[in-house]
Amino acid sequence: MFTRRRVFITGAGRGLGNATARSLAHDGAHVFVTGLPSEEAELRSLAKDCGDSSAWAICDVRSMDQVTAAMRQANDVLGGIDDVICNAGIARQMVIDDPKFLDELAVTLAVNTTGSANTAIAALPYMNKGGYIFFMSSLAGYVSAPMIGAYNASKAAVRAFAETLRVELKPRGIKVGVGVFSELETEMTSIGFGTNAGEYLVGVRLFGRSFRVMPVAKSEPAVKAIAKAIRKQRRNVDYPRRVRLLRLHPWVAQHTLEYYVGPRMRKAHDKALAEDSQRTTVLPPTA
Image (cartoon, rainbow, N blue to C red; front, side):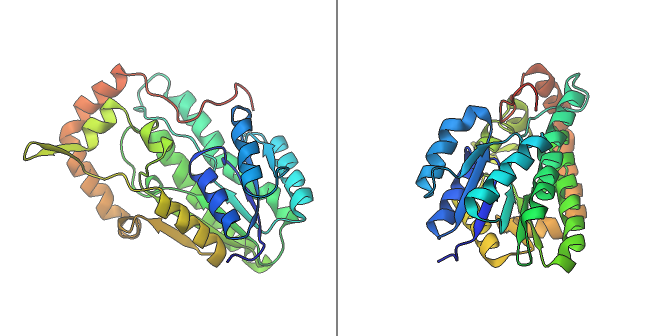
């Protein structure tokens, strides 16, 4: 069983954040969950299921004011903060010469990168020696696949920020962990990367059957890995197992990816421009 750690989680309205909150609460943690206004019903239900109906807040991580207010509320409700999970994130598949790309890049960086930094910085006044901050990065932060340039950039930046913060917080006794995952059975994959262009790029036909070059992994083991990382305060979490090999040898992985997608890229590019991809999360118009 988990000792009574007090855990603050962003992006907990659905997906990995929601499942992780439930897993940690089941193990004995006292969790405080946050999400967007559109997820209020889910957050209320989640907080109640996790054992404290008051342990939730609306929080758009793009807004430092909202993050600061949610962190203050969490400190009051939990009686302190031991662990923070910077989980909130978005994705949208789009080629870089799409006219909408720069706007999408700005939004993606604001949520995934600045939002994670806002969360960590807002938590620091409430954290003491023995605390732990966990950042959700991605294999995309090491190996840059086409058509997800905004997501790649945001997750590489999250990793760089987390590793810098790890060094700076070591004298204070606060540890930092980074989760690196490939595509999982979540809306991040089905909506963010599930376009016609994307499926064409990663699909292959062999003996009359269709296969994905990079299979989508089950999400349950990823949730268990995150929960274990919080308990053990791990430096790195990789899932599925192949991710560790790719993370340790990104140069080889990048060149292999480029060799494979090269002959398909022109057609995939045209497909991407012809379809209107979706963002994984509908964001409020202003933060």
